[in-house]
Image (cartoon, rainbow, N blue to C red; front, side, top):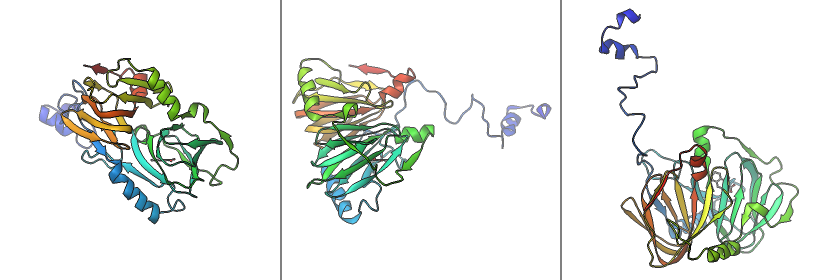
Length: 314
Ligand code: 1HN
């Protein structure tokens, strides 16, 4: 057989049907000098999403929807799920009297509460109140359900590493056999809860410190989850940040205030509750037009674990 391959033409013809290719003449190279732009800078406005989620609240009950949420998919061609390569962001509504049943999955998750009091999340039997500005973690394989015993609609944002789990394949998911955990004990959430008032106090204490992409910045957890790093960041009105880029993929949530983020030549104006994504290696800078707080959700721990975290600050 080998004896018959006497020319390059023969050689390439010999690959046919064998699922192999010569490393020297790929259609698309396997290696390139620096991260290529693929996922797009993008934004979702809470003011547009909220009425649609409210409508879903009238049309779909938590009896029918395991979770009543809207997931944000990046507009890059061919994509139908991730917000950035490794993470997905969603908006969720739980109305008074409703329960989002208990389940667990290998994907790590966290929530940022936007509006509404009187909702509790139960994480591995710990019943934790969720209040606006709070960040609550549900790590890999922890049971979690959410129930609204108050009088207000509760809106929040979810962030999960589901797309990373899709890429690496270790997906397991299990609905709770009883629908809800039978026993739960009231809890302040311990290391799974970051309270808004505590975060604000920490930001206040960080005033005057310089950060590449914020005027004050505190990390929630260290890191919050094995795959996700969280930083709550303050931007002072009228003071632009420097231009940064990082191999980490970032999703921002607007917790307070309004402003504009420049991402790789694109301007994105944002307000309370908006989602803004900054895919890997895109240069970005922020300028708040009123004092603002952003939650920065990134996959930096994944990059860091493998020696791939590179960050440039200008
Ligand atoms: C999920 O399990 C929750 O438990 C929220 O509240 C959002 C988005 C994608 C996949 C699973 C939750 C989710 C999710």
